[in-house]
Length: 326
Image (cartoon, rainbow, N blue to C red; front, side):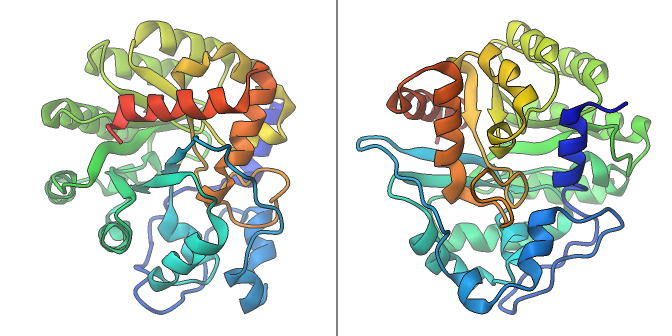
């Protein structure tokens, strides 16, 4: 039978970066429909009132004085869509929901259709950076034209990485061989352009490791994001790649079987991320996840590692700069 972790992950995050993602523009759009069941927090938000959508979270964490953070992986365009907000609403939302200490976020564009919104978001807020890539769910859309467009996006001055990319054998939206070919192409592109990589892996541990070892130098900057895989994979990745960091999301606040994995990853090799609008941490479950929720994740990491909260912030902020220069 599937593990608790697999069932939680399936319930919370169906298919990231759906194939038919429309640009947000200046008009609110309904959430995209998917053949996969929607996460519970998205269902709860669809019928919420306008005041609740534009207001504050019921609980907002405070970042300790002298500390700051970057949300190293989020899909702001998806968050706005699920919240029935527009790009023009982003500034107001940040003001109401992001604590002092938020230094910025890395917006992930993982399909062709999200790129224009990503460029606009970076124009709206200079604290945003971007990564561009093709998610494994969208691997069969990859072509020479898509690659040419991707290369142009990767040359934007606020681009900090290639991705997310990788292998996903849980929701097989593209054949495994196609996923692997596209993964390899993007890894090679990242090396050519001298950019860090953002890796997605799910139920594909052995193949992910094999492809990365065959296509990346051992000292390449790597972010394996939203880690919900085994402690064995975490240890192999960390011992093989000297500049690889593992990202944890709000899942660690309620999936107790991940605590041993979190504890096994040194804080010096860890990144904080939301993967918003997915993976909403307690006590915010029932609402789409956003960068203002990172402090909850930091608090859980501090608890698991028995470290001062300030140490978690300062170390992971340094780690973010080591990977992304941000």
